[in-house]
Amino acid sequence: MVDGGRPANRVAAGIGGLLGHDRRSPAEYYEAASAELAAYPSVTVRTGEIVDGTRIRAAASA
Image 1: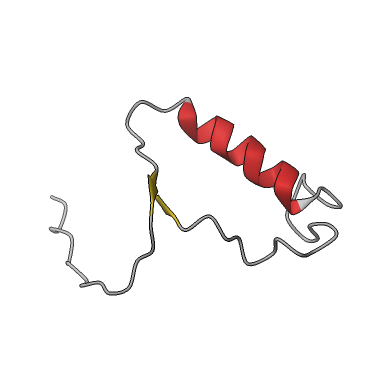
Image 2 (image 1 turned 90 degrees about the horizontal axis):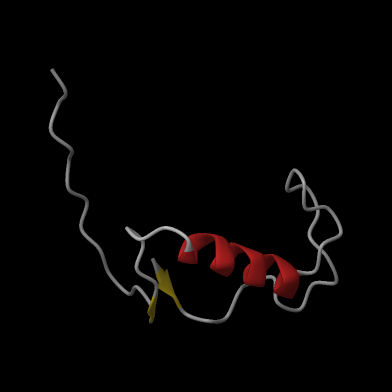
């Protein structure tokens, strides 16, 4: 995962419409999500920003 460290909702007072997280502060959600991702050894979090990409079609499953 690539994290630019500037969540779009950082200035909001609370989250709305995200099941299980209504009224939770964006900072609190960000911290909880970061801790949850850290529990997965297959996930690497990198600081940065994606500026371009190329779509690669997945192989058809049998």
